[in-house]
Image (tube, rainbow, N blue to C red; front, side, top):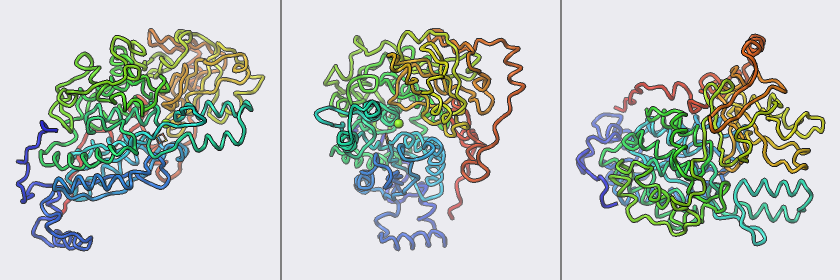
Length: 585
Ligand code: FES
Ligand code: MG
């Protein structure tokens, strides 16, 4: 990091006059006297903290998040780095979003963590921040809040878990769990095998080690330039992860000294590069919603159509499951994100923008190598020639929908078929395997009531199961539509994020069994082939469902959540406007 921007003129060494925290600790009045007295109560000497940049270490560790179980001790490495660089670290526990445990879905609470992040940074004597997260929604939540607070900040990705093992086989998060569960349903494996699999699927701290939402979003953070180089793929339990954490603590202090707020890095160019990176990784569709929300907080104009434009030109280079064959450990040993970004290079990225570690992305990628062309493909031998995402529009999705078309059977990408409609997830579960369900391989399965409000929280219901009767006939993919999201480890011809959702009266609410629906990915179209007059009749008869929450966080959520095309942020968090600094004197 020799070329980093380390100016120290933003505040005088030893004086600390312009540090934000100075207003808490350094002034003459009664309040500052009290803050100093309380810091003595914490056991610190004046010379340990006065005049030093205060770095908040925001930690999403908790006993119920297996992906973050190492972050409790890893925070000590971050603090070590802060001390070494002459800063004063303070660790703050923030809300826990544990992907596999939290109901109905942690997506309901992403904005809550983002609010907590912003307000912790604002209300305490903080000059800069290190954000520790990685499990799915924690990455966007921390970065959304930090973007709104706009202090100098570095993101520390939790890092992927080690690859799974069972009886000589390598196992990947999500994908292999579903595969073996199907074998269990088919009676192919017994109790003993199942309990062995329980121990082999996830065998170390860290985030899911496929290219699911966690790895997609931490890679996006690295591509945005807000992590240290290579940080996003270091396995959680590798000693390199502790060294990266210490370096991030040091870096946060340097960013405070040079006066570099997060907004310096979160530019339009950075978001374009993040989208290109997500596509080159064959990453999760959830990235669309999160990056839209993050761009909104950063004040960057960015829309669904920008995703489509960028996805049309970005080649898929990472051969990582679920789209490819390998796991995150392999990706790391092959060169990690620096290797992949170096391959994308000038042709696809903006190399002259700054990152938290270097004056330019170009300097950051200098010397980055790929060590295994089978895991990170060369540009002339991509896994797919264009990015894994397409944005669809039409009378069924006036505000857009998303499909990861590389994960679908190609014959379904231009398809017309009759709708089989399910009003909500429970009804779908009850009816999908009914032998009398009027469904053929050409049918279009439609799930509604699963959007930001209808779900609520837009659960990952989007990979609707293939009806058992058709499975037995060998059918493995069908066109499926919903206003839900889909897990990053899922696959199939699944049209997701249909906006507006059915719950608020989007056209999805008007579909009836048997209506012809056309999906045409080449022309980016999703159409309900029903006459306008008939749709108008149905709309006149449609009644909005009653509000679900009478009070509490759910009521706040339902009053303010935006639709998928706006990133599902709360409208009052996404809108521009000033928030005054608290009076600390
Ligand atoms: Fe935490 Fe997958 S469950 S990253
Ligand atoms: Mg997931």
